[in-house]
Image (cartoon, rainbow, N blue to C red; front, side, top):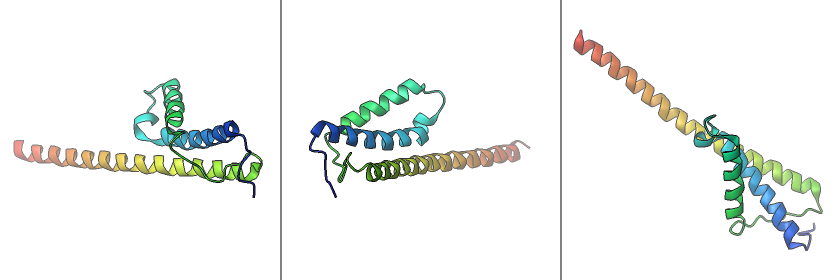
Length: 116
């Protein structure tokens, strides 16, 4: 297995694309950014800047542009991982929202009984 292209710029670009895929999928599904009120351009700029900021910190093992199938599988795996993280965050927000609605109904029924 080849572990690199011996071109630091190509390896950095490959790592950037992988991080861009994960962060992009998180932003698509995560509650603060998945709302339609946030413009698509803002989402894209946020994803690119966050991926650029994380580029020097995160090291992804085994990225090689010489093995396109392995790189595609790594990219697909990162997209699935980002999607799962975004959906998990959305589920937490949905559960808190549902708990608030149930509490609101209970308070409304309690108020009706008090005023009746």
